Amino acid sequence: MGNVCQNKSAYQQVVDKPSNSFKFDNLGQSQKFKKRQSEDNQEILCENENLSLALTTENILSPNTKICQDDFKIIKVIGRGTFGKVFMVQKKDSSEIYAMKVLKKSQIHARNLRVKTKSEREILEKIRNPFIVDLFFAFQTEDKLYFIMDFLNGGELFYHLRKDLKFSEKRAKFYAAEIICALECLHSNDIVYRDLKPENIILDCEGHLKITDFGLSKQGLQNQSEEGKTYSFCGTPEYLAPEIITGQGHDKSVDWWSLVILYRFNNFQGALIFEMLSGRPPHYQKNRKQMMSDIVEKRIEMKPYFSVEAKSLLQGLLERDPSKRLGSSDSDAKDLKRHPWFAKINWDKLKAKKIEPPFKPIVSGPSDTRNIDKMFLNEPAKDTPQHQDLSPNTKKINHFDQFTYVANNATNNLTTSEISKK
Ligand SMILES: Nc1ncnc2c1ncn2[C@@H]1O[C@H](COP(=O)(O)OP(=O)(O)O)[C@@H](O)[C@H]1O
Ligand SMILES: [Mg+2]
Image (cartoon, rainbow, N blue to C red; front, side, top):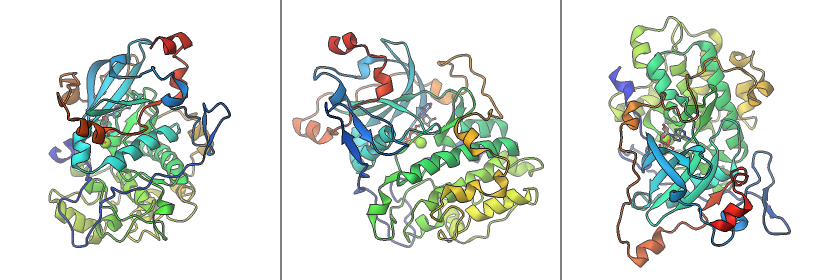
């Protein structure tokens, strides 16, 4: 069981460089979403059904208005990311509870991930989907970046998998269907997610899930190259698609490969005790180099206890040739939605969150943290400044243009007097 208890961290850089050469994804282009400005220059309208009406702070608030970390009271640590902590916070004026993800600028610069971080912020602003985390505010200090999102207190899927060891087929299917809707939305906006794993999927208090963490996502693939492929080596080893490892270029199909997490969900009835305990992805290996070579070469064994439909779905997703993989055609998610394993899912009801989740987390209120790992909750709930005095040049380099953000639904709570008061 020991192996599965560790949170897996995503590769942002090549550590064990496999045989082919890889290039990093630091020069990713921003997707050119069509935007229109209203006559009074206050609204930015995105011409896409999945993109919400978004207002930037620069547009809606007076020049003196500031949303900053002082507007939030830190209550607990609820997660740890690659570049900093995630806190449960309370907005001082409204008492609303949020999740606050903090990134250290020095670490972003040290790993040359400025463009990726800007992209994470852009995606969070632009995409509105019931199965993707909502961004309410974003702001920065000299040394850190802050994202204020809805606090999902039903727990990570990783936490529930570790606790329950197995999910029923019904439960696995429900989560898979909600994930498919989230990925479908991202793909239709020309975004590849690239980091699907149980740590990045969190349940809300009702038991619906949301995908979080767009730190590895890639925007604008269609503009990237003639074939619409990108070549960066990134992702989490267990879930890397073979084409990422071999460096032959990848596209949205990598997200369908990483649905192998279904394989873990699918450790349903009759699974071998060993596998239930380990909950391992199909190629799990302690030795990462060996694991990557297995992903590329080793035959995937379908367990006899998987239903015929589940086997067929997994086989379709675990197709090594990305052009033959289920979901690789222009129909994308529709190919998965049509698969017999999902025959009983009413997709319209699902998207409207009208299907009752098969599991409802126990929570007593929006600030209940019982589903969060104690390992995080026990950490000191403090956001300590990283540097005392930064040189003017470092401050200049450190500044992220157009990072500040206030979602229009967040401003509903800000009255005119509050805005002018600030
Ligand atoms: N909105 C949220 N609600 C609850 N927990 C969250 C939220 N966002 C992130 N977390 C927790 O913090 C962890 C790290 O955040 P994440 O965005 O995945 O950072 P990283 O990019 O470093 O992996 C997540 O795995 C999750 O446990
Ligand atoms: Mg993460």
